[in-house]
Amino acid sequence: MTKHPQRSPNVSPTGPHVENLKYLYGNKLAALDGDIGHISDFYFDDHVWVVRYAVANTGTWLSGRLVLLSPHAFGKLAPYEETLHINLHKSQIQDCPAIDLHKPVSRQYEVEYYRYYGWPAYWAGDAMWGVGGFPVLVPPLRDEIETQRVYYHRDDEHLRSTREVTGYPIEAIDGRIGHVSGFLVDDRSWAIREVVVEAGHWYSGKEIRIPVSKIERISYRETKVVVNLSKADIQKTVDHGLAQTHEQSVQPHP
Image (cartoon, rainbow, N blue to C red; front, side, top):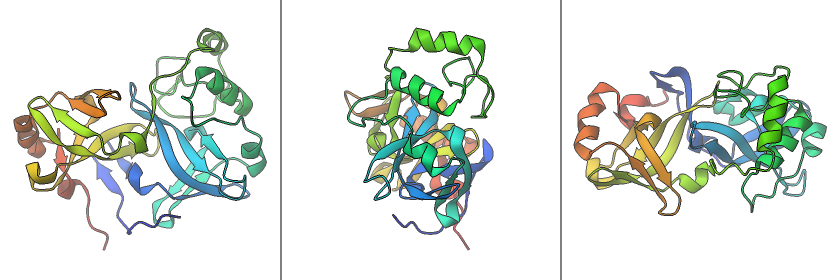
C-alpha cells in the first residue's frame, strides 16, 4: 500500500470534510468481512464534477482483478488509517459484473452494475445522484426504469480517470499556469469542489486551488484543462476565496 505523510483534514468553505484524492490512492479497502485490496484510481463525471466510482485493485484476493465501487457502498473514510470502509460483503463484490478497464465505462455496463446491487441510478433524475445530492440507498423509481431503457446502449463519455487528468496543464486565458496535481472532494456527496494546481515558477511554486465552476472544459485530445480566468484574475482572487493557495487551506499536522 502506498504510504503518505500524515496530514490534517483539508477544511474548505464548501464543507468540513474535504479530502485530496491523491492521498487516497493506495489506501486500503475494508469490506464488512475483510480487506479487498486498495484504491488504484477514481472515475469522475466531468460535467457534474462528482466521483462516480473508485477503482479497486483486488490484489491476490481476486487474482489482481480490478472492480468498480460506487460511493453508494462507501462507509467511513479513515484518512489516518489510510482506509476506506465499504458497506458490502466480499461475496457481493466477488460476484459483481466485471469491468474491462481498457474500454470506456458504458451505460450498458452501468445499468447491469446498478441492477446487480439494487441501487438507484444516478442518471435517473436532475440531482447529482439522480434523486438527491448524496449517494443514499432508496428504492428505485418507476421513471428510473424507463430512463435505464433510454440510455441502455449509450456510452458515458464523461466518466474520466483522475489519474489520467493529473498532470494535465492548466490553460488560463493568457497562458499556462501550471498543472493539475489533485482534486478536493467532499467525502459525503463525493462532489469534486476544487482542482489543485501546482503553479511552478509562475506563482512561486505554490499550489493553487481553483473551483470547478471556473473550469471551462477538459480537452482530452489536447490533454489540458481550460479555465476562464486570467493570470491576473488568479492573483487577485487568492485573497477572496475564488482561488486559494495551498498554504491557506492546509494546516500542517501537529
